[in-house]
Image (tube, rainbow, N blue to C red; front, side, top):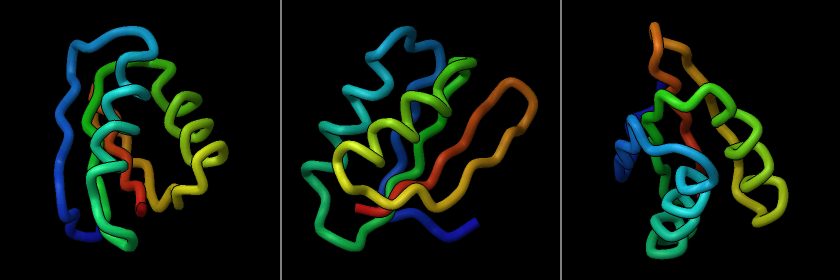
Length: 75
């Protein structure tokens, strides 16, 4: 897994809030920087994939670690 420039820990956050917080964080980052999102939300993959597709971010990697989902997204 590539080293992220910033980490967003949204474990326990439910609903579309994960997507909203990821978008808000990515918008503050510079182009080319990488955000690591840590969540326990089961449908987070759909939200993150949709966010990347709609906003033009690059979905780099997904890792499942027990109940945690880790995502790397490049701005």
